[in-house]
Image 1: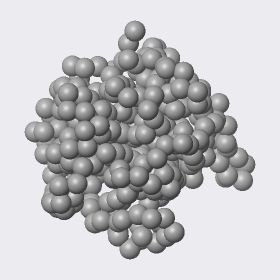
Image 2 (image 1 turned 60 degrees about the horizontal axis):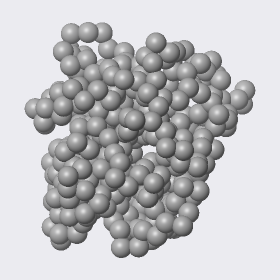
Image 3 (image 1 turned 45 degrees about the vertical axis):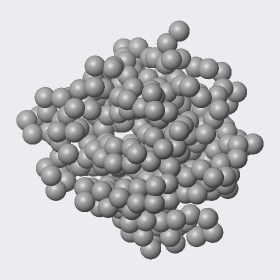
Image 4 (image 1 turned 45 degrees about the horizontal axis):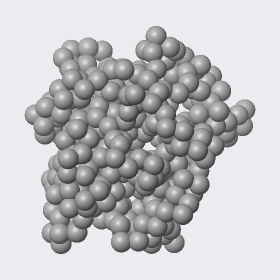
Amino acid sequence: MSAQSPIDSGFGAASTAEDVIAGIDLSGKTAIVTGGYSGLGRETVRVLAAAGARVIVPARDVERARAALAGIAVEVWPMDLLDPASIDAFAARFLADGAPLHILINSAGIMALPELTRDARGHEMQFATNHLGHFQLTTRLWPALVAADGARVVSVSSMGHRLSPIVFDDIDFERRPYSPWTSYGQSKTANVLFAVALDARGQAEGVRAFAVHPGTIMDTGLAKHMPAEMPKRLGVVNADGSPVIDPARGLKTAAQGAATQVWCATSPALDGMGGVYCENADISPVMAESDAAPAAGDGLGKVGVWPHAIDRDAAERLWAVSEAML
């Protein structure tokens, strides 16, 4: 049986982060959560800290992050995912005291930037933020992950991976027309392929990797670049603009959305496993790419990962390309 198939976890689409972490003691464990001061990241930080973990949140605006996390026992350290020197400095600070890193959750992300934007190195901004920054952070922190003797790295992807494979011949949209959603889809496919390649490298040293689709959560700020009419057309907001909550269609609260990344980071049911894409707090089945794409609206409730996102050859190629880009 393929590792990419459900294991009947006992949880489901409506399960919350608190549900999946119930009874798990993280005392003595250290976690780093990017994007940990808003939306899904903040809920993830809250439940990890409540379970006893030491939690560090990297943030470009440290004071803003501290204010957003007021009341939660958490450390906020400066880091900018688009600044390679900043990532290196963050990693060096963490590695300096020799502490192990048990959990790394790469939760920060941007979606559907309306115009083609590039980072300082010339890379397309969604790919640079959602994948390259996290690739650099994870590889720099590698000694601490190995030292944990049982670490997990969780990359927050999306069903948006169905929108595009990695277009290796033109990742940065230098020769093809830019599309906000194609770009987003490519970056989310990269998140899944990164988990596949990372797990292949890490399992012998006790480092396992997972990618997750959290669901569609409309009150996290991620959708701020989405055209105003799109949420209503897709049926994900009510007439008054408030989010529709319907877990069966993947429309979740932040607490429900954070469940899968917390489950992947902490569940003993996943011991000895990795390199898989998960949703609804379980491993997803493989889905035929002939099924409807989420942009069509009717893909919202469909569970599964498309083959292009778990292709081992593509994962290895992406790893090599990412090293070259950095």
